[in-house]
Image (cartoon, rainbow, N blue to C red; front, side):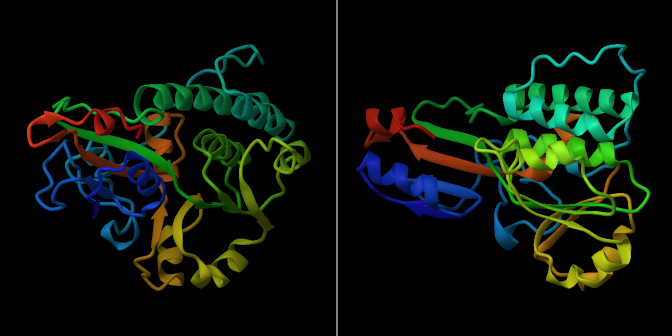
Length: 280
């Protein structure tokens, strides 16, 4: 939790862009979070593991387990309704996939776009109090993605597409090489995804260096218990180990931080137009 008292809209705007906390408060107290208005939890150790903000729209979503529901492939290679970056990931990744895997990646990317438009891509104030703004927004989170031995390459391409949409920095560990056209796209002037490094390594090598991991780790296949042991139960490592689904509502969450922003939009009962209009 963090707060600022200021009548300077520019100062508040700069603070909102830079502060690293899960709950932000402007011109009011920073305690007494209310369910839905200020769902609680956030960055660093105020959130341990793979949970979501308590009292927020994703809390129940993270309490269960999800299984992939597969569909029959569509007899087409057309790509529509995807942003430029995501469409490029899907096209470049196609070189290493059979048609069924490609179709799954495409359907997943389409689901991601819908979830982004309906849930994650735009800050929302569902309480609509007027005198107080309570905005929930999503910011990109760095993630390490691991493709284990024997796991489908298409699942890794699917998650790279998700990270491309959210603009989350990726560190990739994979048991098999990625398609060359996809790897080349990471170094273009307008990269398809923010990829900081790619390491091709066995499961044994991956676990041997796991003690250096930090932050969020999304594994595809492999042994989650072995990884948890290898990191020594470090609370700074969150291991996402569920099956990779085509649901954007589920699969985008590991790549996003939830942040609640509460702004008092009045001053002694008089509307504060600058704070009411402040872009969040």
